[in-house]
Length: 440
Image 1 (tube, helix red, strand yellow):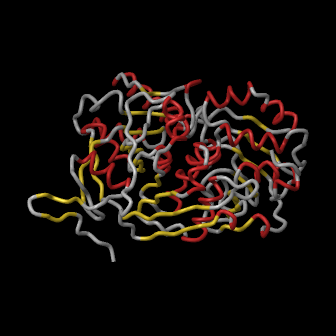
Image 2 (cartoon, one colour):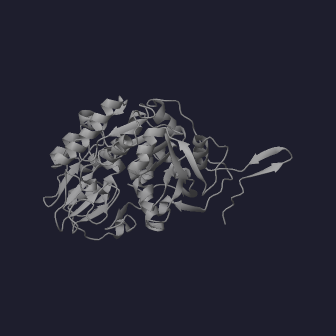
Image 3 (cartoon, one colour):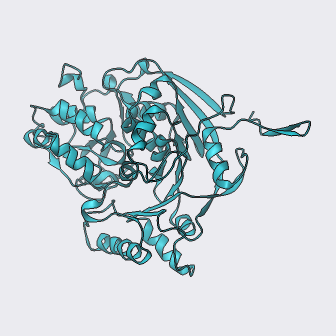
């Protein structure tokens, strides 16, 4: 039973009941002292985001409304990342819509050509999203920014259009679930494995329209790259948002990037949750999600012999520096199996350059991998690695639905970058220890 009595009177003093971090951020942006689960609110947005698939529809509706200017040219962000570099005439036309609108509206945050990166890696890197923000994006993986201590969620293109006009969006305040991770990490385990393990337990609808709050001593030890990876996949459990309370790791990350002042929020000690679950990381191996749902997870030790045609390291889930370094450590001095092709996709131009400067590209190229410019590419069946009928891919992406990466009779397996690199070398899904014996 959820307690919805969020305040009471003691004499003349009003006492406000405790709130979660999600509820506090929503209350602040709605101009309210408090909110409770199920409550409908209008809230001001700090960032409204669109990409080359979703923004053209939003721009069309924006113009149909009669609006002449966006509510704030610094808060509307457009990133054409899904089908770029333009793969065909239709994608080029989509991007042209964004380009013309961005120039017409004089948007501060429009990324094109050599500046473009995968949106959910690019915005944190640029300091466009900061702790305490309320962010909406016409892309379901907007929940990534919860890793910074922001409330971030995906919306439809028409909701984005309304926000571009008014600077506001409406929300139903979600119930919150708390997931506590403790204990020591097993070898090769990272944030991607924690979220896959969790989705494997609760299912793809296990957090439907709820806030997933990740905490505990193990979460505190996670790098920012791993936190971003973890929150990115909250939507794969059906969640409204995923969030991690900001701490020293967050501060170190945002202080050198933040464009704007930020605020750290945290849940009250006695905040109310609809579900609380606790995990010992010692029980979690590297995970592999089998077709055709992210919930179909297995421990790497239970996978068996699964030949793989294509390996992809990249996407808004695992295309960051930490991911590329792990893959390179395993691939150094090795060759990709003759039966397998491997595609490496750095998520942003900065990550691309850093990986090149660190010598990671030499390792990839000597191993026989393909290096792509920053793009969402094959993750959504866009380009740069579409699967043929009957082919299998292992990817560090976030979804493995039927036909997600190409032909409806292809298959996609999900795993972390260490497993991906080992798989490329072996030509089948493989434990990293099969390729490299010493953990770095």
